[in-house]
Image (cartoon, rainbow, N blue to C red):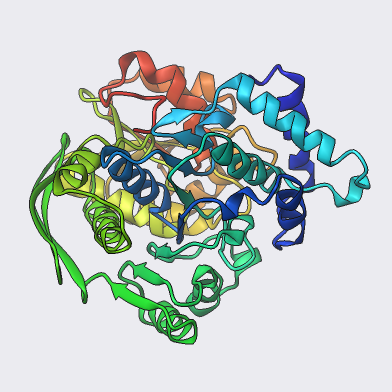
Length: 439
């Protein structure tokens, strides 16, 4: 796919970086025929857990018999992963065709007014979903919410997952500021589902919901879950809402935090039932049980243990460490890491060092222009903890070969760019199935 000229053109739009605002996406969508106004949609914002919630809810809708579009970001291996209908990626031919349509729209546009990569792909996705006559779209917000390109959707249900500190150079330096951006997806008179939040973030979400006269449903208040079992194979939990009670729901996703994510999907499905969607309990059970989301505490190997996780901010790293401690209380791990320079990598490393789970590090370079030099990471660790085993192997493939040649337990984390570069190479020996599939 990468070798096609249309894909190359789309990739050149990465040069325009990240620009928050809705003018360009509205221009593109107008010339595509405003496809985003042609189907009902659910919009999902937050810092961590968006992809898991979006993929699960989309799978529930598919299991309920609805032709369901799913738009997520970023991708791990190929761009087509971001655009799916009933779990099936857009084909290379169809993506190339939509990019050609985009190029025709941009023919008379001055170069400095070209869209960013994300804006362009969002317009392409929304148009593709109209072409395929989907029944409903589940859409993950790219970053923030208020000025994210996806926020042009006239969603009737919004979901806000756990809010943490990430993309602070764009979204703000406090939980209130970040929550204000995330809650910007709330539309007039809609329903909103929120995860448990820190008090400052929750206050902002409540205020935004009141301002928009939207009905807010909060985890821990309007619906709760109780986990009944967990293991490296998955988890079982019960869900209790005001009008819904479901028992012994199984999910292959690991970590206590995923139970919270699944509760958002179940509550959202319950609300969609009140909006006219026919979703029997069986669709919810099967939708959750068959949803797989790569690089979210994915176990690549059992003995010794090799885990890969896309944690790339302090909240995600804390969750990852909590899950390691819960599933493997008696094991220590070495960490293969690569991070982007605009992330709070010092806090992430400090959390690992203070966890008492670490045996050593290998630092490498994710495939991104924003990658932080692994030498900087190594220097930081050696200053914080003298005598710690630290290696720098700048090429990720060589770093992976080193990991495979050892007999210890490993955790690969720090960046989805790194995980995406590694996951395909580990597919042959992967324990969790469907490495390259998100359902």
